[in-house]
Length: 320
Ligand code: CP
Image (cartoon, rainbow, N blue to C red):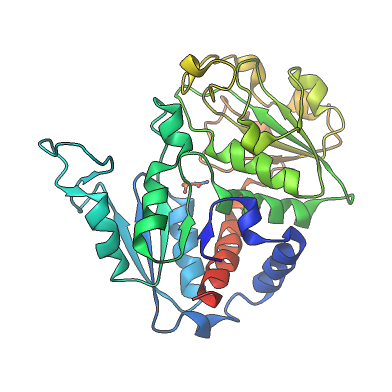
């Protein structure tokens, strides 16, 4: 595996899930794979889970790890070609990427969506330059439009906790004070479509996800109806994807607190487990009692970030 951005990159999901289960039993089994090799983890924005879990995964595989926060301690990077660099950006990504590649064997990149230019975000301009100019395997640690390590961890968590072969999984929009990217819901929808689950997506009108990720998944605009009989409820806020109205891309169209996940709505489900990728705004996205309930899986999900990253980095090391 040379790049990791979409569900298809990892191949058959049943094999990936079996590998994840085996690694969880013995996470140091492949410690020799990374000996005398280095992983470079590059962050263009903040992170808690991805930063810690990916370092842990790389060390499970015997790798040396170098972490670079681009905006803290490195030169500010220009990412657009053709710009006259007379501002505060001292170095261009076109030099920085091949230089960084000299010091490592594989690269993880965390980028972000600008949320002003839909075409630029969905073209994955920054991640694409790492893939094109580094000559190294590159995996996404969340990009402008996708968060595959999170979605893989979410799938592992559902596999571990499902009570029937084909559970009903509801992806629900919930309110948030700020505009957030679509990366997590995009990848969650993509991975759930590839997995053996009954996926229902619920959100206010205008928040339709990009068909590239959501495909022909059932969309239900009545959140309460969507929750009926659900086995898993996955909550996440996202800003307007601009699918129905491109001018609204990245905007907050609603902060309707009637979409907050609370105990009354969870009572409509089939005793569903509650999921969220974290960080979460309590009592905006989900009430205290739901996230603290025994059916909340937010901590096991976060724990599985180490496992998903270990599988992905292992596959990349095997392809070197
Ligand atoms: N879920 C997730 O990616 O968390 P961080 O942004 O803290 O890495």
